[in-house]
Image 1 (cartoon, rainbow, N blue to C red):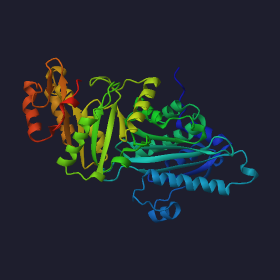
Image 2 (image 1 turned 180 degrees about the vertical axis):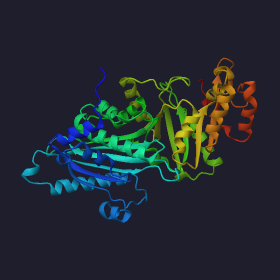
Image 3 (image 1 turned 120 degrees about the horizontal axis):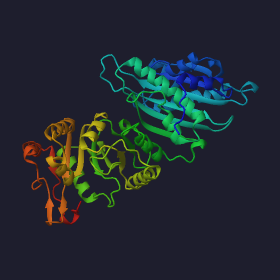
Image 4 (image 1 turned 135 degrees about the horizontal axis):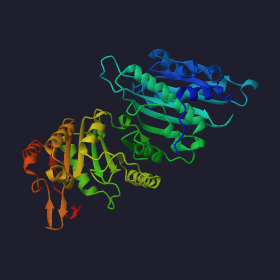
Length: 438
């Protein structure tokens, strides 16, 4: 049965009328949009102990401390804001008047669209809250991308998602899937992307961060989730900003382990051809959530399948690699996603069998040449190189590379251009024993 979704004002009013919920709003970068919703709902004095917005960097640093990275729209800044504001609540709000209260600190640090419309609007939102009076605190931290092309609309979206976060913390934290789904209540499709969630604290003791972030993909809130070599969910820019990135693409329910022998050769070749220094290289293993290149990306996965992905991600992280789980069925969609991180260069290691499909007109419809041009433009205009590893055609007992791969007549000139200009390169000096069938 479809759940009832209260309007944003009703959510804020319910919180305001709950005598146990009391706390602080600290917002930087997009106005005090979340607090404004609670003020306009009425009875805000029952909820709000303090609101503040330290826009000036000197004031902000004097309150929360300087950021070594120089990035103030960051997880680090958000965590400092939450820690500082929550500590003040615990320190100052004592005595009989506050017995029975469940304290919270809400914070956000956001960059909306600038005047020249040249930035990537995004923000960090967080909630530190007690689920029981006097209990230990819990944390919910989100990273969002604001997708509207108007600053006013982005501010409104931020206000709504902030109310949803406070409401979800107190009324949906017992059901994590419902809590995640409710974060986009009363928002139009395409206005926001949620690409990271971290949950901490006793109320989330049974939550799996990997599973939670995969659920974002399953619900269409994000196209990918990234995990570092320790299995921690990461925001893409934090891990990949201005890096040289090499990706090995693997398929959903792939029974064999990734061909690390050939992949390691691809990494070495990428470093050599792109003149990459080791410390700037980030290597990722990608696991596709879709099993076929033409599968519907909007199809939802079951909880059991998500658990399989979480387990698979954990296993690959244990190999010492960063892992990205995505629903990007085509290479150019991976490139589009990574371009947000402004990488120095990107190498994609892929099987010749995937290229064979792309340059085969029979795999597509009547608009094949238009689709192929769009694909090539999207992919190779972003400083991307494809490193193709061979496969064994067991039927003919032949190793297939770019030199003998069948290509449709209408695609052949474009394919030869990409080969001759090193946009697509065979992996070199491989051992034939490492070549496998598809």
